[in-house]
Image (cartoon, rainbow, N blue to C red; front, side):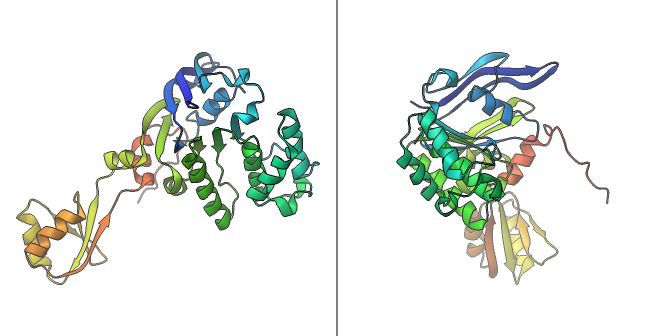
Length: 306
């Protein structure tokens, strides 16, 4: 199985411990979002998995093997860590051809990934003329070049336009649907929520969560129900009989918290309360993430005083 397995992984830089006894697995067939505040150890972990740095202790393997032992590694693992890594004087096609030759990948595969990433029309332009979004697409093309079973991408949406963001979502889901192992590091919570099935969250180098995304949200953000009615007294009375409290909002609606829309809808309907609106306000990944990591952000602006 082509999982990414990290066991008791630790990396120290002098007195600072960037990764602290981290243990987790990234499994095939799903998109795993890799989250954490700045300085949490995400980039260091990715570098350790890819053999770009040596751990102080512990192990990081791909399919049970260290990355450094893989022959023709692009055939097994595709990665994007830095969209600026391509040599600016080369054309996009020449950059990919150089990678292909070193990994015994046929030249036709270069043309396939250029087409897949939308770069075919600019493939013979020098990389230094590329926009940030185009460089990002080139980095993704390089990651896909060997048709790998494992894909690691760091901030793949960075610099992409709206069409590109929709494209990367669909790409990630397709790769996971094909049974590949997909790990995506990102700071964009709303974007991560659009494609991730599972989350691994770090804080100060330690594992904070390793769980399905919806379970992560449900455990930290209780659902609320938004109600608008022409008879607030009847609403409050019906809710109170069942142990619920409604809080009036400035916009004229009421919030019941915590509660689920099916339960509230049933009891207010039975009570004959006239409704103008009944909506579930489910928790978001951003809310759950901030709740978990508030104490683990290494760099955070102080709250403004009222």
